Amino acid sequence: MSNLNLNAKTENTFDAIVVGSGISGGWAAKELCEKGLKTLVLERGPMVEHVKDYPTATLAPWELPHRNVVTEKMREEQYIQVRGFCNEHNSHFFVNDKEHPYNQVKPYDWIRGYHVGGRSLTWGRQCYRWSDLDFEANAKDGHGVDWPIRYKDIAPWYSYVEKFVGVSGSVEGLPQLPDGEFLPPMEMNCLEQHLASSISKTFTDRRMIIGRVANLTRGLNQRGPCQFRNACDRGCPFAGYFSSNSATLPAARATGNLTIRPDSVVAEVMYDKDKKRATGVRVIDANTMQSEEYYAKIIFLNASTLGSTFILLNSISEAFPNGMGNASGQLGHNLMDHHYHVGAVGSHDGFKDNYFSGRRANGIYVPRFRNIDEKTKRNDYVRGFGYQGGASRGRFNGSDKIGAELKEEAASLGDWSMWLGAWGEQLPDYDNKVSLSKEKKDKWGLPLLDIDCEFKENEMAMRKDMMNSAAEMLESAGMKNISTFDDDKAYPGLCIHEMGTARMGKDPKTSVLNKWNQVHEVKNVFVTDGACMTSSANQNPSITYMALTARATDFAVTELKKGNL
Image 1: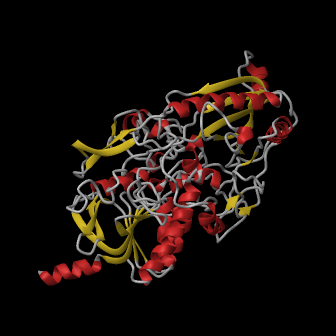
Image 2 (image 1 turned 180 degrees about the vertical axis):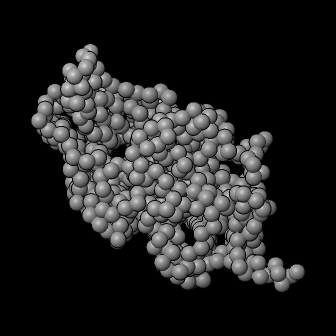
Image 3 (image 1 turned 180 degrees about the horizontal axis):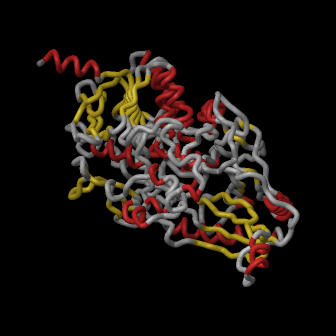
């Protein structure tokens, strides 16, 4: 019997374990495998193979049973997910909320994808670097703790991942939005160009640019190019956009060092108090409910912000009675998301002889222009926001005609319209937190997460400016029928940019991770997904997760070879 156990342990032992296969987990797997480590990737959901498991990728709306509307069954089973971007054509890439419950102490929309590739299959693909304006913000205005890194520390890693990902964009020379390694940019349509010109002429502090997006405008590494179908969230059979399934996991697999185990719910990280090191993870098979242990020298937690923090909170031992790495008492705290669903929309009665070609999987971007320097400083709130949006021209509607006249009018084009939606920064706040339920458990016997998070005074003050500034930019371009919007039901989580809860920092007394994304108290455990973030900035965060992951894996392997791990 002892021999059998020994064999089982040997078979379950790897150089590295990565928990999660989404954007950051895919990068961890690629880097560790390419550096020669036998790497196990654990994913709590089922396998999704590139192309083969994209069932709706090439279907037109009329080829779907319900013409791509949200069905009553979806409203019943995916009642949180349908508040986001879940529809008939992609519902298989979003969780069943009935099967994966959590407790909302305050309203919180937790949008999730439990499968190989995670939300890398459905993400918005917008890629914007942070600058020192973002990395220095906490230290300068006193919210949260100081980041242990600056832009210079991560800049080379931004370049490293961008060259592999493939980010299309334009070089702008803006200090608050550093340029990157770009493929040729997509083009603005005529109304967007008009608005961009108007903004530049009217406002000295603002600029509108084409979005920086992980869609390939030319082929890269045997992927793409983008076909301008704008059907990215179904999975792309052309590999026209970056995902774990189309890019990082195939690169990891090509090394021969990758093992993927789907349907594996990680319950905890195991710890040896004598060696002061993690030894591996305990896994529950999602289907059989059987428990199994896997062992490795280094462990990367990339289970998503709340998933990774759950694992640490649930890794309770004599050494860590309140969760692994929680000596600071900060684990689970400082949950952030971007606040959005606020802005303005308007129409334009010009450009009647213009239309657009294809379905561009991208929009425009207005980089942050508030609280950058003394000239742009606001007295009613700190930090800032940026805008995304776009212009389009639809079909004419609303006719009272009948017969042939109706057909002729229905085939005609309507006016151009333009929308601007703002993405704003949420401040780190200790009271915005997650914790393990003391009463409720899921079907695997694990405690549910209690989520207690809300937007506070600074975010509310910022939203007023986000709405009004959008309207004034549209007005500058001669837009008509301008209407503003501010959705008070856009709760935290809905932007799907959840961050924090296991923050990086300089001081182990006030943070969970150091500058290398190591757990302060357990040097062979790394967290490089959204949980590590010390502040949220206002830019889409995924490219920063990728850069931090590449940087941390390089450090981890170097330390491992030195015998320090």
